[in-house]
Image 1 (cartoon, rainbow, N blue to C red):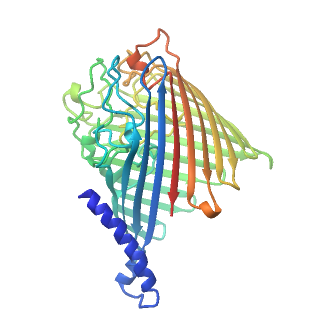
Image 2: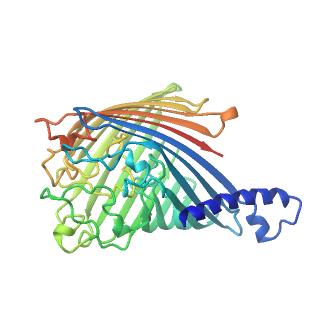
Image 3: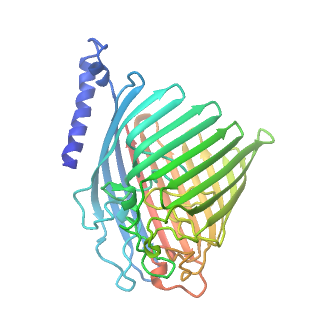
Length: 458
């Protein structure tokens, strides 16, 4: 049924465009005539990824292609509608049903290009995505339904074939230097899946780690919540940005994040970059379940962190030195199904989520080329985590590691307007003393990951 609906969507939007040309000389006062002048957007995407695990562990590859369409109506008395869908095709890939014979660990990075809930799924890879009604009046904007949302934790996490989407209501206010946001969400479709989940059922769609006793976490299917509330406030001037966000997973946790960024120019040649950020997280209600072993968030887990950034921008070159300290009071816990954390020390292909007692530092370099809209990024970092057997502060058993990456993005113009390419290469090296077991290293450290992505939008 989804494939039938998406096919109908593509055909209908094409018909709308054709009808628009036919009606260009006719009456344009009716609502039907205005709807026929909606905006059609077509998106094709090609994603090639490969992971090479060192130390004789399995390597993987995948090539995915996709085609989607989105249609948005004109604004009529401030109201508008939008809906979209996407097909994904597995052109070639490793056999994701096979686990490493020595560790029992399966693929981590390539499978989310398709359906991570069913490694055998090669055909039913279509998603019905956006379906929303919006209203805009001056500085106020509201959306109700299935939509993309981007905040420091809840976000589209668009680094596979399709992004995260949520179902609920969003409203925001933009006036001069002030920006406010409020949202409430009851369902989500995580990247790497083709299904929608109630927020309570979405906990643990991705591999869910261990509890503080070293046993597999048991919160999957046992987390009780009404949804997720988000509130944000920003004040942005020419040189400074302050923002404060709150994420309330009803009956599970409460998370606050604050951040200040500044960019001071001392001359026409040099800009100095500074920033500080931090978060605090505590339990809400019974952490998802009154029985402690079934709860997502332990009663005594308190996550606290502070980070800082300093850098220099001169001409097309930008350098930043970044640091974050997560205290040993508890681990940051935010479902990876909902989005990716955004910290100064964040780098592609790994996260701090699930860990406490962390020291993280990196050096980032960016080369901007505004005329061609291309960008080269290089990064190197050290991430010191608790031991892999410190279950309370290292949920996923991730060893300490060194992280290196390079990334190149280019936007084409002229004949190839609408086409862009993104190339990423990552290497992570084990820094844990005592040589942790293979199951803690495979797909995590001592590995290389490469991705090449083409997007064409028109």
